[in-house]
Image (cartoon, rainbow over all chains, first blue to last red; front, side):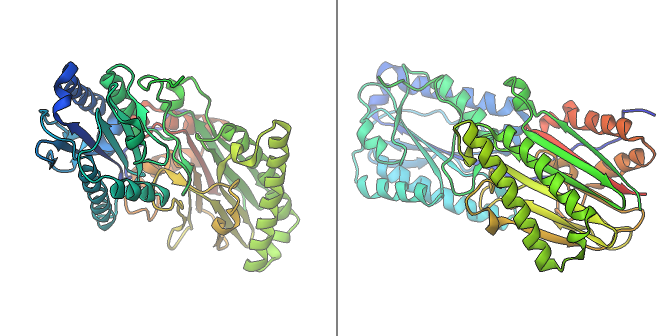
Amino acid sequence: MSTVIPDVALIDNSDERALLALVLDCSGSMLEEEKIALLNAGLKTLEAELKSDPIAARCGRVLVISFGGDNNVELMGEWTDAMDFTPPTLSAGGLTPLGAAMRCALDEIESQKVQMRAAGVSYKRPIILLLSDGEPTDDWQQVAAECKNAEASNKVNIMPIGIGGQANRQILGAFSNKGALNLSGLRFKELFIWLSRSIQAVSRAASGGTVQLNPVDSWAQIQT
Amino acid sequence: MQWKVFCASATGKNHLDADEPCQDAVHRQALAEGFVGVVCDGAGSARHGQAGADLAVAAFARMLAEAVTGGALGAAAPEGRRAALADMLGAVRLQIEGAARAQEGTLRDFACTLVACAVWRSGGCFVHIGDGFALCVPPAGQTLLSPPENGEYADETYFLTDERWAEHLRVTELPALGPGALVGLMSDGVSPFAVNRARTGFYLPFIDPIVAHLRDAPEEVGNAALRNVLESERTFAITGDDKTLLLALAA
């Protein structure tokens, strides 16, 4: 008798999404050290990584929010399934309306959840990744407190990440109960590879508990 | 009635790539007129999730088998049955706690989910904490389910080792099962392809060829065949998770 069973269908009947909002600093200082170019290249890496992994390509759902200009917050397109994700080309200039951008991200996440639920689609705890090389030029304290509250009530997982020596770690850290991390060197590429893998990670946490993400040592600066 | 009980586990792609072992565990025992089966999924986020799963399946399967064979479980009314099962799970937790203490850890380090089934002549039950899936297809009538409990997020669930585990203990009563009945237990790595999109039963293009094959298979051959399905590279595009499936067929 054979140990190979013929004609067994193996397809994915589950519909599970991982929501990822990227909140990206496009203020004038991002022009220095080619940071904006490296960030754009990093987004291309994210696209390639997401699309090369069949699970991430199917599960991931991405929204890019940029902030800069004359205190402008801009949705760079709509929520997009990872398999259809084409990153925008970001250009830098102007101010750093970080607070308004984070409020926009919180709102977008919650309305996307409502749509997922209405469609009967299950989802993982959403991630907001905030990248900034400076400090806010708008009112940020209130939004930062809302971000911490949203995290504490398990609505979202927020990762503020400082770029370069001028990033205000203290202010960035106020947006998450876990504080902020610093990008080591300008390792955007390693950061986005890590992010793509985090999307399809299967390591489950206790419901309502703290989320454990993959180790970040490939890109985060080790504090001494 | 005789039951044939098959089971297999396959290490998920993510654990294969990281050179880590499978964190699922499964234990089953055929009894004179029924069977017991237990599937546990060790939490990847816990240090000793795999050890927790191993301990839990062995201890709980032994207790369930004793309670079925001794007749206590079948004789009880549903409420009494639930209480007896909760007592057993409390004892399993104590065992895990002892193991944790010996390794200077805590219960949380041994976090695992649990989905189990006990079947005797006049009935049966599913016992479930957290995710994973249990299905019972009687010879006639509707499929009975014990679906996963995840809370809001698909990647978060409840564990036997949680402090408030008793609030998340779900017991589903099963009727007396006749020849032709099929019972399945699975970890959450298997349900995306073994359960249908509406989550109302097995996905038939998956399960029908397997059951047809297992009906005539000796246990060892059937287990190897099931393992081949779960180890198939075609599952890698569906899940990176460990995969465990137990199928019991009433002859």
